[in-house]
Image 1 (tube, helix red, strand yellow):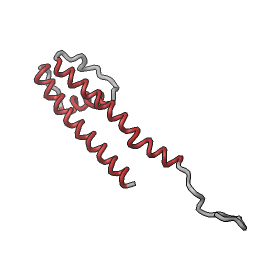
Image 2 (cartoon, helix red, strand yellow):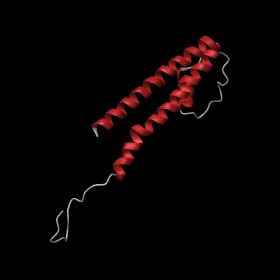
Image 3 (tube, helix red, strand yellow):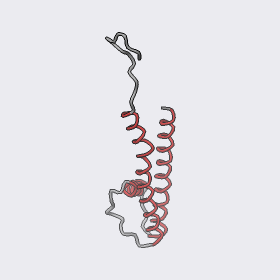
Image 4 (cartoon, one colour):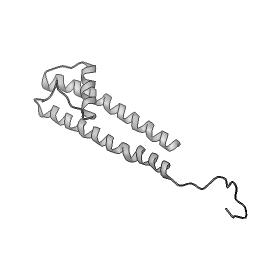
Amino acid sequence: MAALTRRIAIYVGTLLALVAAYTVAYRWGMATFEGEPRTWYGALEIVIQSMTTTGYGQDAPWETPQMTVLMVVIQLTGITYLFVAFPLFVVPWLETLVQPSAPEDADRLEDHVV
């Protein structure tokens, strides 16, 4: 269980660090390359929308190749994190559910070897 807790902490910690870094990069990129500054919460919203692949609306399409590349990297990172979550967390959890276990007691048995 300690290994799973450690994995979850690393996963969530790196995810939060990436979201923070992408938010800073997006905010800077929009002001520098697109000439359209964004607020911190506006940049965070776009990063979350990109990483979860829910879509945009207000900022797409981007005019510069730098911002387009940044958005592609953010989208690919979000998809990768989603796919990484399954083998790291879902599969081990399912394995514990279907793992056979020996009986702990043998009620009402006589003359049997367990």
